Amino acid sequence: MKFKEFKKEIEKEIDILTAQIDSNKFDEKTVKDHIVNFYKEIVELNEFLVQSNLKLRELAKKIKGKKSEKSSFEKFVQNMRISKVDLTTYIDKGWNFLVEEQYDDAIRVLEKASSLAPNDVKTLDLLGWAYINKERYDDAMIVFQKVLQIDPENSIAKNNLGFVCFKKGIYGEAIEHLTYVLKQSKDKVALMYANFYLGLIYMEREMYDDSINFLKEAIKIGPNLLEAYYYLGLVYIQSGMEKRGINTLKDLIKKNRFSKWAQKSEIKLKEILGEKYEKEN
Image (cartoon, rainbow, N blue to C red; front, side, top):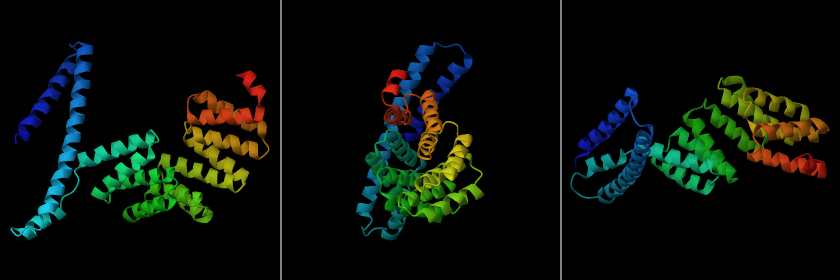
């Protein structure tokens, strides 16, 4: 097989495109079309290579019991690992399914990736989140506990484990995990979600002042965390500060009218204001 020659052809194609773009002497539409078509071919090829990799792995398993050179071949089979390219393909697919809220498909792809790379933290984090969205909290808890065995300081897993404990009603343990992140992590995203989840926990427990403080801190760290605005609005309303809550929900809608959190806000405002809200909008 002339894979080396094929690889050289791909590299040559990329070099040609690079030279054209760097020269600033090219037809923009032609080059764009070239890039798009070439990219599609690469994606199709990558899919083929992933499937070929899996088929070879299955073939290797089928013949590992043959007499000739049995021990060396078994060792080869045991040492076979999913390549970084293959794993990235699975992770990208799983991520896209999560974004599209196709959680069953995400779980299917990410479970496959996890079976091929059992200790890949990124795969496990995404798989755990897919389980959460299907309300498979016990499965999610097992996944995040495994992540923490691999990487005890993983703030994403700590946050997610805290959220799972919250959904299971284990408030004390949830607060413990999330507070740990606040004290130990320097990652802004981790801190944002730790504050957000604590805000949800204290909202659930009707400790509204604490909830407001944590949600406001989450918004301060991440001004585009729309769900934090939504729940802050709800907390204001539930705690008797209805006007402030209404204004918070209206501000959220202005930020991004087409987001699902804006749509949820509109539903809530219609419940509270009725025809008045309809006339205003």
